[in-house]
Length: 273
Ligand SMILES: O=C(O)CCC(=O)C(=O)O
Image 1: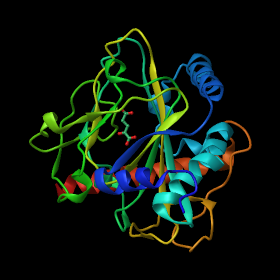
Image 2: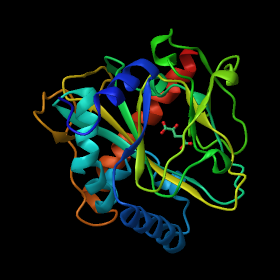
Image 3: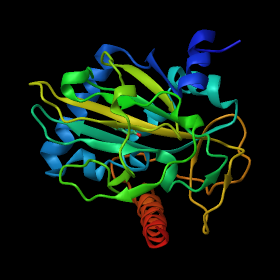
């Protein structure tokens, strides 16, 4: 019996590689998340899409709480199993009329664990629709061969690696998602996905959280870290601190260490390409 998803949603996830909409948090809480992102950008002068992109759950207590949120983890458990670790969480912000986009890619390209079956939750803080650049998917692509990627370095790509599926994708197959604030998508790490610029007058803000099975084997050396959010730790990832205040020194040190490993992995991927 699934805990949060209906059986047909579990079936859609397996067949298509993604499922939406699934309620994660309330609309009121989502609006509060938008206020926090706006306040972060105002007080620090930094872009949340840059500073809070990877492993932001190590920097912000409120994001650390969100990745542990029962309703979210219940849905993840339905497709990933009972022992769950959060590897990372990153904020994707597109302001009104923002040319920022996300190139077609598979997440699996720069992650180093086995099996390649991690689950991403994309939690909408604002509404997300075609006109403000919601996430788009190529259904079933998680079951096709892993596609080659290239580094395109196009302006306004929100992906830090700027990786893109080589040769493009058949956009006629693409499915646009539509979410209300507080709703989420669950997607498989091998699904091909991306998003278009925001042509609307509304912002589009979401938090993308990556969950792995605690039993997954981390193949990078040294091993990357992850946070146990449910069930039993199998000891396959380095453990992580819980931030007690914004940018607390322990969280920041774990964040810097993890980001260093991530950048190193991206570099060696690039060398091997
Ligand atoms: O926010 C977006 O448009 C894309 C997010 C994404 O690529 C992801 O969550 O894996």
